[in-house]
Length: 320
Image (cartoon, rainbow, N blue to C red; front, side, top):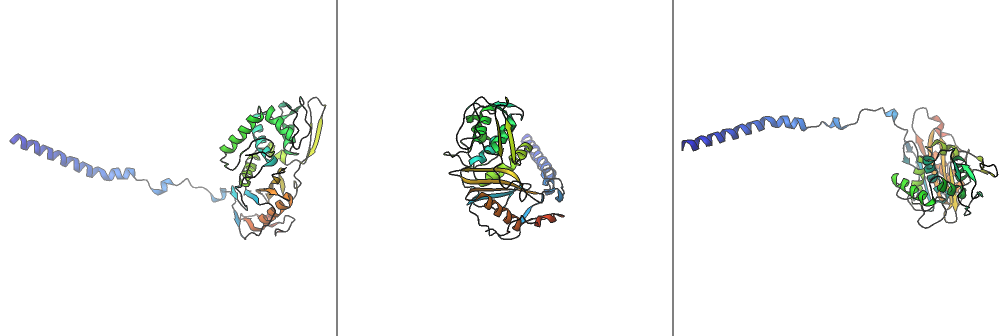
């Protein structure tokens, strides 16, 4: 009996010790697990390091023929005025911007590419099988006059084939999380399941023009290319009639029977870069000018010293 009582006493003693140790350690454990809310905040930063943010001061009364348009402030990534921005519409030659971006990643400008096929659909320069041009020359031909035969030459000569080019174009917009765009050809010709949205196109334009060569090409008014053997030369104008006017410095036109008139513009608003997109327009230049005028009228980038923002674009501030 004595042995049994002794065992019970030792068990009770051990349980008491365990309980006391638990009570003693609990505050310490609690303190170790606590995280002060301030520890979750990022390191301090200067507000002045943030990009100027566009603020709308007035209601819009914009009326244009395009039922699908968008505008984007490049620095902040903020979408401005827009309507039906995710609607799927035919891209026309704006598709060539995605092709050009891929070509820039794959082929040096000075690389010579041979024309692998006689292509005659839509707008063409008349490139012939076997002629050779530099990658840079074919980029100018694809982006300024929207030459489809130049786009095909780039797809086949630089990327390997039209099929590979289309796959890479779709892979890239997927990587950029642009869910309202799908390509079936590199030229932009009307085809089933070939579509884009105004919001996606504005984002594509802002991304591809980060490449200085593409920005330079789309800001060029006139260019001449010559085949490597000197047997052929082609001179052409940029189809963007607003280039060099009202702060416009790029980027691309497009038109087909189904798409009607498309236009992407890059404009400098007293140091603030704006991308505008009008799709399915009856008059893309008038629509774009009215959109730019309305953006100028109702938005302000409130940063110190930005006094030039109020300058007029040379058109009425009120959309017609």
